[in-house]
Amino acid sequence: SPGASWSIARSTGQEGMKNLLIGSGGGTFQYQYGLYRSAGLNDSDFWSIRFAQAFNAYLTHLAEWGVLGLAIWFLFLLLLVWEALKVIIHFRYEEDNEGLAIGLGLIYLITALFLYPQNFILYFSIFVLGALLVERKKEQRTITITNGPFRTFSFSLGLMVVIIMVLSLVYLE
Image 1 (tube, rainbow, N blue to C red):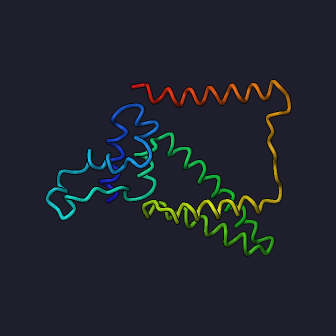
Image 2: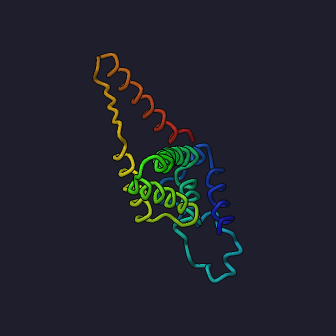
Image 3: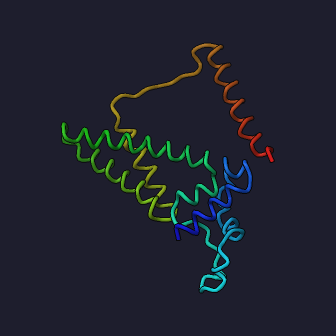
């Protein structure tokens, strides 16, 4: 149920700063369920079942990836929806049936993540439609970091700082 899934995700985040920010780890919802499930389940037919996922994909990701991981995932999905909406709105001016089908399909699948648990087919379809949508863009942009030694050094240093900060979150507790 959504309430039980939210309760498990919330309890996982209350374990500490690490679990709040980066979660308990991928594929660990089943263990979090075992720790924080309601005692009332022992009186039901589901007393021996350990659920591997929450009610929907977002609650599973909140428990497994934390607030930071879920925010990055939402940002990615928001960018895909933004591109899909641009294609759908552009349909009025040009007869672009393929773009319309890709855009509407992508928005439908992202909405389905609120209603269904995560599965391979759902994510595979989102990434394929997202790739098709990005491929259809007329303007292509290339970002290079090798224009000069200072730019390359700055990028490498910034990337190392980000990696060290993310790894240090593991050792905060």
